[in-house]
Image 1 (spheres, rainbow, N blue to C red):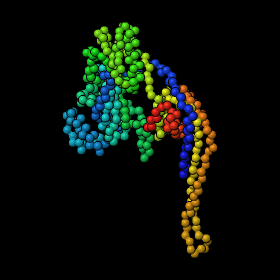
Image 2: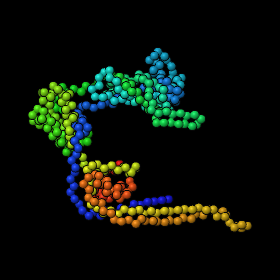
Image 3: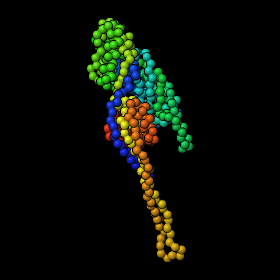
Length: 374
């Protein structure tokens, strides 16, 4: 059995105030959205038919009841216990209703088996109403399934690729009703940030005001209400061309800001650093202390012609410890993320060592960033 222990010593030599590099301007629509303009989830319980013996079978009562209901709608009365549904599978159908979708529009659907079906390949979804959270039907789905995998089983051997119990139907649902999103009666619109931040919200408000002044010479129209919301007041002329005005707002260049943060996933050894991460000058000594415990078993037998003695199992154990010689390394003060990465790479650290070093740097106050462990 091998056990490893990483010894990290961090000595803080100096602390310095560091300035961040200017952020790059990006479009507002990439960091925010207009309030009320969003997608809506739809779900429905459906039946897939035409499977080649890979359906739910007769053991699932809900599948038999579903088939019984379908047959009854077509004028056939059959007891559910008499149904052998090997070629049928009960599925959950999901879809997303886009903003401003109108009746007659087509949307993609995702089909997932919820029973014992082993493969949906070759199946066809029967007409399935798709409802919103309010219980109202907004779309209906139907059509042949497109499965991105396969499964084959014969003689106790099985080969499977991806998930054959999940399928898609491109443009498989027709929108029957839309969700009203009126904008005509509004005196203002709200811009919602994807990642709330006071500095970013303030920068967005300034950028919108600058655009409004350049176009119409108007006073400030945008105000940051909080870290996640910017309110834009609408004039009479802007209400008349609201769609084009929102398009102009979405194209406004903004300078997003974010806190210095390091995301650590200890399960996979993944470390993600934001651009604002900085390190003060420190000295680091990192080495490995390894313990090795070995166990050897051998059979011991009595001497030949011995009248006493039994065959026994003898265990010989040994333990050893090794420690690498390490030198103290100076990690220079960094003013950019590339310098931080270059300095850490120069230490020749593994992912696990890097996580330990970063935590020790934070504890010593030499790391100007928050560490989030997941």
